Length: 334
Image (cartoon, rainbow, N blue to C red):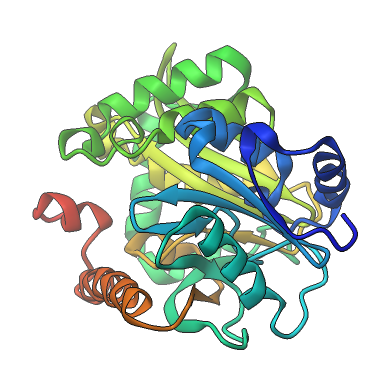
């Protein structure tokens, strides 16, 4: 990319920039940093809402919303050799080009960015994978007690099985389970949240994520959506058919299911991808910090900080009270 500084609409992205980005996929630390992800994202939400900025050897992708441009990446805010003040310059370039009061970098790994507003988000739980998950069942039993074995037995007694699916079948399964989950009843399913279903369908179609499914005969009843990047697997989504809640299919997918799927693979960690919750508590062996950044510091960044911090306080209070995630949206005990 050389010394070029520019902001491109997705449809106008030059081929040399695409080629550079494709070559940088090998150093991506999360699927959200890849060219394929950005392509699926633009197809899902509309290419007119996706812009790509290049500046001094850096590249970032941004989603245009009312009043802000939000970085599509997580973990690292940009690809390339990030130096002092470069991120601030790139953010200024984006803000000027798309005419928004604030440029937002959510869920990055470090708050060290000169000139930008920053604040701490809730940590993301992880599972270290040095033992390839052999320590996971015992950790679950220690933390969850006899309930762990009871829930595993209910899964087996119900005649449920787990197997991966791909292609068009995977997209159909995702659609079916999302519509039967508790999230659908309160407007939180993939179908209700800004083209998430279109995004994850696109990622499945591009083989950027995998889908492990729990089956009752030929009926899909739960899924876990994983994205592998290098030596890290991120469990980006999971859900289940509410009719099978008492069989604990989601619990099984995130405990024994992880070992069955990834136990033979050399990984550094499995990222449970998101804020702590009661299910992640029984699985996780650690956590990584997350921060938000915004440019420029000022009223718009402060309002964004207040909004995100309020959301985290509600999630933290819910977690401390030992309530499941669904309580936040349904207001009823899990």
